[in-house]
Image (cartoon, rainbow, N blue to C red; front, side, top):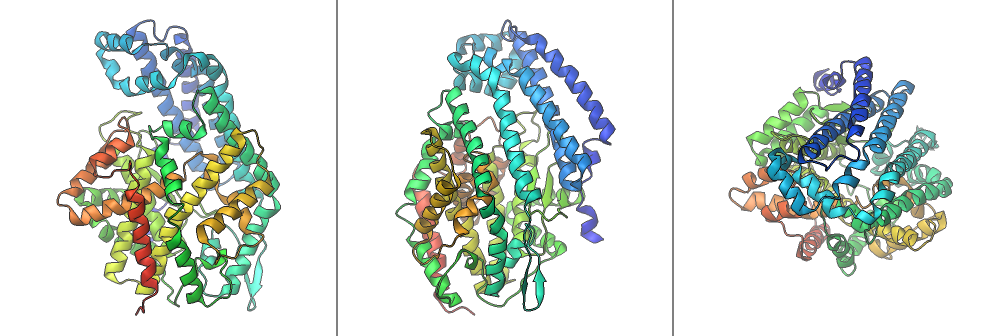
Length: 583
């Protein structure tokens, strides 16, 4: 079995069995009921506030562990029993949110001066200073009553909407197979990307058509689900007295909205290199019309495949610049069974942080070079959690998502750098792959972000999201970003339906900012003495410090547009290399 025998989660790291899990749920419900005794008493004394915070975060940590166990079981076994476990965990979450919703409401009535007095009386309150001050900053007394009574209902609505989307697209969708040259090709989430990388254009075209047919067929239903989700975001923003859903979403990590706005506005006049790339690739492929299914096409006949053992070896070599401490994390991840190979037909990969445990990483492995990058990316998330949780109590052990996407992308760029230098792939293959990775991770995520910003704007103005509106908007943005050389078809407009991230408002832009910051970090690792230690300090930083401050300490400034322009200039330099003769 070799490495495969260790690429299966040991869920006993969380609970010995389902019976122990159910026992924990019973004890948790008792703790939740115990917590309700603090209602109308949270801020009556400094000691009450401290005890309420202690119990709340202890319960919250256990709730997250219970939900994680259910979700990991479902993703490992995909059976009816594990589906029931997920539903049970969702009920636990709903009960927790409903019965503890008074905490923020009551805490928000504190003044900063009174809180400082409480800290002097009960010094251990410093432990929750960050969380309490965030509540004081974000809550508005005029809306608290409405919020406390309704927020858990909105969360339940959100969860059910996203779950319905997942069931529809992952379980109910049926993809037709197709035949080419006497061979039948099945279509599913797991193999679609590989078919899109075929050097046979007919295979790319037919797999593209069959894959997106259900998204076009069910576009009305998908539009209705997304409409509900976006409405929820807009209502929550209003209830919390934010200007809009963008400001509300970014406030959770103290990210100013101008970071997002600058990203999509600054790209407006700098799409020339992307248009140029489409033109060059169209000429290289020698096609009359360039379609969406041509982007992943190879530019030569090299068939680069990589097994898990080789991928593991490459990880150690590629991430060597991060030092011995990071190398130990890689070893730990393989020895302690952080990984599980996804055996279903769904194309899902992720890294899950579980309080009090190691990260759990799900991989979709088909021996593609892209699988190597997914492994390095998800390991980046896992390593970040492992570093940031050291010597810290929950909730400080939870890392910033904004930072986590950056450090995961750093890993990918270090792998690319190693492949280029080691000449494991032909120069043209590597260049083509890197440019595509760049396009998807940077430009296309900004396209997604602009699409998301537009549809939230429509809903905030009272419009409903229809299939026609969404498909037309998506086509409009495809034409804007990729230029006149991209030929759109009836399936192009339906691609938005494939993006689950739209149900987590304003998340996708973080992939683009991550790519920008990661390119800077990799360059600094190369050129600045001692930067490795500064980077590891970033990984170990507490989530109580806002991400832009952490990045500034690491020499990455997001306040201007230079970082975006530098990234686009770098992309243009890569595209120019496609014009040159390559060995």
